[in-house]
Length: 295
Image (tube, rainbow, N blue to C red; front, top):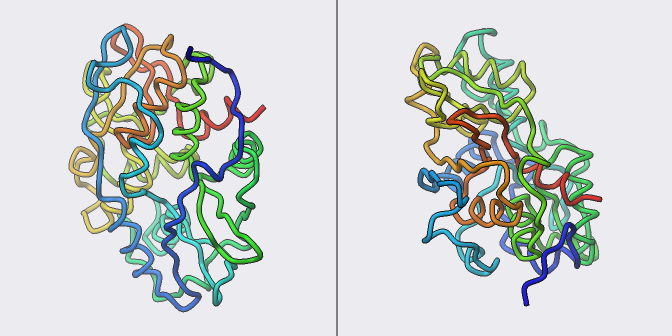
């Protein structure tokens, strides 16, 4: 019999990824950016769902069904020898691009000729394989990070991300409803906006993603730090539609958390939009998923 829970059990070891991409202290930032772009190019398709919450072909799957897919990541550990000394994230690169640019309303400037060691956030958040899922979820929320690095005897052996946490939530059948954990209101932007406007909105709202809506308020795409960096070569007046992601998961507020987590992990959508009466009323971000199971 399937058991529904409101919390997670066990350690991160069963869900962490052992294949970790890393860089050295001397790696140029442009190579770091290219590495992130190369491993984040796969996107899920646009998923629209009826009131049952899930279409037939996207029913919940066990974590192993999605773990075979290449991992997507938004930061890389910086190593000195075999030991992790810091981390460079997409947020760091976006901040540098804005700082080097002309300011408000301008496109991102090319990354400066600096190394990963010069800009790395130190120290990186490191845990052991036996750390509990709930505790690590709490660390993610407290520090507002999307991954922790796993070390044993000082050596980097893996990474545990919010995507892995989604798999753990699906596996544990956490049955809280989306309406109970969503952030509201969702930050939206009209599809007629420019890339420069969208990038500025990301920075000033202190969020990592925006929902792009059409003239009737229906979500048509997402614009996150990932899209902002990928669009750095575009003129600032380019349409946000030219840069946004079409990977959408739209569900109603009564859908259980485990079902939303399973769908988001399988489709690699980074946010779940909560829809009522054809309008976005909230969003469940990776950190919202973590917050829901961190206590």
